[in-house]
Amino acid sequence: MIPPGDVLIGQREIASRIVDLARDLAGELRRDLAEEGASLDTPGRVVMIPVLSGSIIFFADLVRRLPVALATELVSVSSYRGATTESLGASLEGALPGNLAGKHVVIVDDILDSGRTLGLLRGRIGELGPASLRICVLLRKERPRDVPVEADLVGFDIPDVFVVGYGLDYDGHYRNLPDVRLLEGAGG
Ligand code: XMP
Image (cartoon, rainbow, N blue to C red; front, side):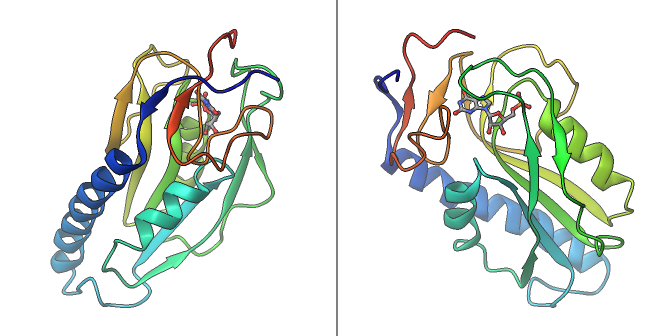
C-alpha cells in the first residue's frame, strides 16, 4: 500500500473555495431560471448528479451551500483503474436517470483527468434533452484530455499528479482524508 504524501490542498482552502463555487453555480442557475420565469426556489427545475464514488464528499459539502430547490440523482461510472493510477476507459454502470429532459442538470465529479468519465456522461446526458447541462469538478488536472470535455465550474487546477483524499481514493483507500494529498510513488 502506497502511503499518502504531502498535502496539496488543505481542508480550509477546500471549504473556502466551495463557498465560491456554490455562489457562482447559484448565480448561473438563477439567470437560467429567470429566463423561464422561475427562481432558485422553484421545485423540480434543477437536478444535481454526483458521479459515484469519488465525488461524494465534495457533493455533500457543495449542495449544503446551495440555496437551490434541487433534486438529486446518482450515476456510477467505472473507470478501469483498480490498483493502478492510469485511466484505461470508462463505462456507465446501471441506467441513467430517466427524468432529465427540460431540467437544469449539473454533473458533479471529483476530478477531470483523462476526460473519459465526464466525456461519456456529457454525451449520454446531453442526449436526454436537458434545458442546460453543466459540469462542476473540484479538481482539474493540467494535462491533455484523451476525450475532449470542458468543465464549467472548477475548484482547483492541479498538476498531472495522482491525488487522494477528500473523496478521492487509491484502490478504495484514503477517501476519508480531509485534505487532498499527493500519492507519491504512484506510477501513472
Ligand atoms: P477520468 O477523467 O480519467 O477520471 O475519466 C475518472 C475517475 O478516475 C478517478 N481519478 C482519480 N482518483 N486520484 C484519484 O484518487 C487521481 O488523481 C485521479 N484521477 C482520476 C476519479 O474518480 C475520476 O472521476
